[in-house]
Image (cartoon, rainbow, N blue to C red):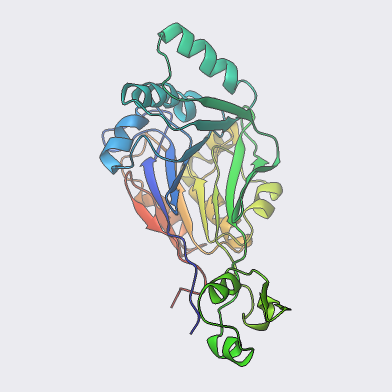
Amino acid sequence: MGVLSLADLKLIFLGTSASIPTISRGLSSVALLRDGELFLFDAGEGVQRSFSKAKIGFNRKMKIFISHLHGDHCVGLLGLLQTMSMLKRDKPLTVYGPQGLLGFLRNNIRSLKFGLTFTLEVKIVREGVVVESGDYVIKACIGKHGMKNFVYSLEEKDRPGVFDPEAAKKLRIPKGILWSKLQDGETVEVNGKKVNPNLVLGLSRKGRKIVISGDTRPTAKIKRFISGADLAVLESTYFDDHQDKAKENLHMTAREAAEMASEAGVNQLALTHFSSRYDDVQMHLSQASDIYPNLIVAEDFLVLNVQYSDEKV
């Protein structure tokens, strides 16, 4: 049995209400923690309090992604940055979002008269690749909303296949650092000859794909974008009885989100961004589960662990 290179990946829902917070639901924000790095998607008002309650930590490696500039998705960014500074954050921070984000932050920080204790970089998002590292890529797709809205995905690159120690022994590769390099997919040299990792590794193993929608109507473009996701977090603002409101305000119903996830071959669906008009959002479950059974109605501080496909039993 080979050694697996696994990175923990979990989501924490920090806010699941749309437009207006409720007693039990804060405004839109999802934290994705992967291998010690935090990716924050949207920052509704009061998100720094949710950080504290979820025990996430304010001075850590972090990137923030804003889907659009409606207040329930971005106003909390100001309080979050101020709290970070008051707690003496010293790690640099990059915030990604649509055109206008830089002016929004610059003008409000100036008006509120608070300084930053860390370097803040703001990058304007365009469709396609937003961030790429050695083992993951973050992409953006334009949704259909009242202003420019981005749907984001985090897609891990494929991992090397499972290491076969018996194959390595047959090739007379000494156990130790050379085995480790081969397990990481590196070519090594043994007795003057190069050994390709394919000789001791099985087929590459698929990485995970997480998609987070922001606010949008369902579109064919988004359906393609979420295709094959291990987990899709989709807005579900309305019930079926407010289908007209969903169309008017450019949001989705639970049924529409379920239909899109089903057609896109998504492995698991999490519904979020519920209108404050609904006291019992479990109705979303009944209206969508007949179309797409593997779904979750998100609550604030719900934690979802996302496994690799080859971990699942």
